[in-house]
Length: 280
Image 1 (tube, rainbow, N blue to C red):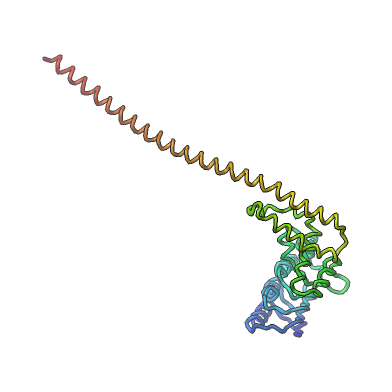
Image 2: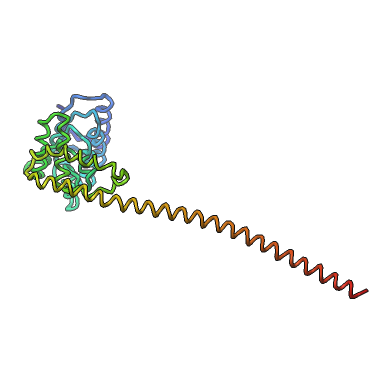
């Protein structure tokens, strides 16, 4: 535990603190209180290095009464990506604008894409201060339940969040490059995701429809990709032939130009010969 609240620590002080903690390869610090200090968004950026560290064991971070602005919230949200230790983030939520408040939810789960949802934080259980907590019980509940699971089964938590926000895994385009080889991967993913039924209510029929819908979307999308690839290849071959013909055409024009000059020389020689005969 390290309590450095109300010490007037500025951006440089926070940078030095983070540098010292990371350089010392600290693996035991679980609680860090930096509330009511003087650092700004630059200090939050320095703190993000500590949060992102793979060796971080920090569970409780307090930066209350700091009036963290939109940029600071965004930096924290990015830092929490892949963080696997932080459980409580204590900070004021009234220092940001209405646009920043949307970023508050990204602190807990980025639902903008399947991949971002998967990479979101899955350990936080409280975010806020006093009566200004982010009220997203479904996320906190999943994270709390995930803490009770063994490391292998904890992968169910991001799977559950993906099923909540991306029901049919609609964004399948990034996987089209694998073509039909990806079908078994989808089937295996849903097979593993069956364990999510214990975390939120859903009938077996609904879950099966999700799986069938995801496979249908993928299979339907792959032929379009294959067709685009085929015609793109055909277009490439046609353009190669076109360039070859253009090169031949260029050579023919050069030959015709040479022929024209020879014909001019021939006419000049004939004119001179005709003039000499006339003078005899």
